[in-house]
Each structure stands twice: as structure tokens, then as C-alpha cells.
Amino acid sequence: MQTLEITRPDDWHIHLRDGDALPHTVADASRYFGRAIVMPNLTPPVRNLIEANAYRQRIIQALPTSGHQVTPLMVLYLTDNTTEADIADAAASDTVFAAKLYPAGATTNSDSGVTSIEKLYPVIAAMEKYGLPLLVHGEVTDADIDIFDREARFIERHLTPIATNFPDLKMVLEHITTADAAQFVSGASANIAATITAHHMLYNRNHMLAGGIRPHYYCLPILKRNTHQQALINAATSGSPKFFLGTDSAPHARHRKETDCGCAGCYTAYAAIELYAEAFEAADKLDKLEAFASFYGPDFYGLPRNSDTIILHKNSWTAPEQLPLGSDTIYPLRGGEQLQWQLA
Ligand SMILES: NC(=O)N[C@@H](CC(=O)O)C(=O)O
Ligand SMILES: [Zn+2]
Ligand SMILES: [Zn+2]
Image 1: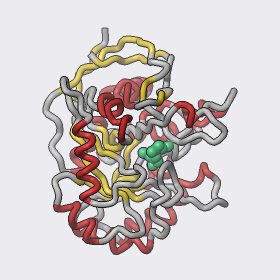
Image 2 (image 1 turned 180 degrees about the vertical axis):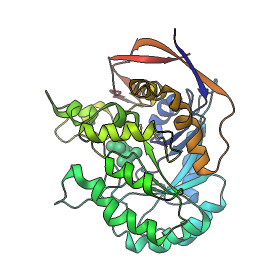
Image 3 (image 1 turned 45 degrees about the vertical axis):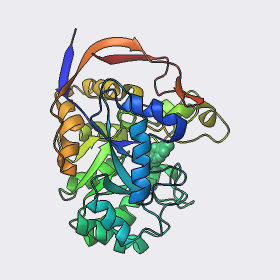
Image 4 (image 1 turned 180 degrees about the horizontal axis):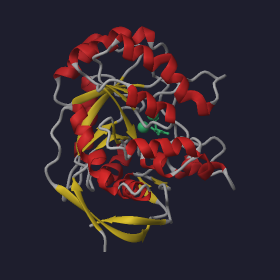
């Protein structure tokens, strides 16, 4: 049996949600991730250090009592009312590691997001000054911009100006989905990086739309055409330290995805590294998985790499068709289908 031993990975983009969902999401994230950058898009969102620390406590209370435990790294949710003092407090803490820019209306729970990125510039200046990374959901929201073009337009309109105006800002373009984004990040300075999900490496929009509409493949930014998928595979497996693992595992109750207006988000945390291993193996680049999953993320954030390892076996198994999420159930990505890699 083929075996793969890699340094313990971290997840640099995950949604753990809150309340009775937490025991489930936290247990899945704890299977092997050392640390997790925890997205702040709760309702209400995590807007300041006090709210971040309270959420962190709720996560810690939900950690499994035996076995490995993931360490939550908290993130602030930027709003039109975020102040430079909010940034200073967060940067001085040892619990908050970044702040997240959601353009208002761009994605799940982004209603409190930023309505004018230019008005946010003083806050971004503070992030540059204090060295707090800016994490970006990079999509414009204009009704007249095609949903498949929203990431590329965001790069031209907003990311390029931010990068020019704040040359020392640490910035992560989250869950990139286009060749345009991969190119932008590759060509940018070393303080600009990107996370890539397993599902954007494994799938393109045909998987979601050809032969029937499959709501469990619907996430934002939306899956693009296969040439973009190939660009993401190339970026993730290139060995460039600018691209690292962020699952964007985002659970939604099954009935909220299988409905007339379904939610965006795919649940992958139950088999995240297994799905990435499959994608890297398909590209014949398994040797590049460890650095993508375990080195480049902590290097970018200025944190130590994990010192222990995990082991994966090449061994086919059937993914569960559904999983509990508090009092709801979720249909995980790949539910009921075969997975190729298994955690030892
Ligand atoms: N990716 C998604 O489709 N959904 C995420 C939000 C996000 O990361 O944009 C969620 O919170 O459900
Ligand atoms: Zn997002
Ligand atoms: Zn996300």
C-alpha cells in the first residue's frame, strides 16, 4: 500500500460556524489540522477583539476531549465601522491573526461587509502598519457583472490599487478560482499570497451544471471552466510559496442547499487532506503536497511549522452520505462516493 507521511498540515481558511454546529466542525478540523484560520462570517459577525476572544472560547469548549486538538487562529470581520483602534487591538493580541474583507453582498453572511473599499483605506493602512494580514473574498458584486467574471474584475478594480497603495501589506486572496487570480498572485510581491481549495482543484463548472444541476458543488467564488481549474492545479503544485492550503470548508444544512435558492458553500473538512492528496496525485505532484499543506502557510503568517507528522494511506473508502451539523444534517462534498486516500 502506498503511504505518504507529511508534516502536520494547517487550514488557512475554514468556517466552523457556531452554537450546536461547533462540536461537529471542530472535531473534523481536529482530525489532523494543527491550526485553523477561523472565518468570522457569523451572524452577527466577529467585529473586534472582544468578539473574537468570545468566539475563540466557544471553539475551545467544543474541542474534542481526546486525541488531537486544532488551535483556532481568529480573524476580524471588516465592516464600514471598523476602526484603526480595532486593528491595533487585534494586532497586539495573541489570538487574532488577520482581518477579512467581504465586499457587502458577495457571499454567505456578507451583509455586514464593506460597501466601499476606498473608505476602508485608513483601516488597511493600519493593517499594513501593524503587520496584520488582510484576507480577501475577491469578487465584485455589481448586478451587471457576470458571476463567472466577478473575481477577475475585483482584481483589476480593487486588488491592484490596494497592492500599489499599500506595498508592505500582507494580503491573502482567499479561495482563488481563476487563471487571472493565479497570475496576479504569482506576479505580485512576496507579501501577497493565495489559498486554494481542494474542490476548486478537483472540479470545474461542468461538474456542477452538466447533466443536471448539483447544488452541493455550488460555492463562491463559483466553479469556473476547466482551463481555470488547470491554472489552479498548476499554481498549487508549482512549489511556489505564494499558494497554500485553505479548505473553505463551509457547512450548510442539506435542506438549505437543496432548495429553490440554495446556499453557497461545500463541506470538505471531514476529508480535506484526503481530497488534496487526490488532486496532487492526479497532477503527478504528490511530492509538492507537504509544502503546500504544511510549510507555506505558516511561513507566510510568520508562525513556526508544525513539528510532528501525519500519515496517509492510498486506500479506497466510501465517504458518508450525510453528517450531523447540530440538529441539522449536511451532505458533504463527495458524499456516498469513493475517496482514494485515507488517514492512518
Ligand atoms: N465559500 C462559500 O461558498 N461560502 C462561505 C463563504 C465564503 O467563504 O465566501 C460560507 O460561509 O458558507
Ligand atoms: Zn469567501
Ligand atoms: Zn470561506
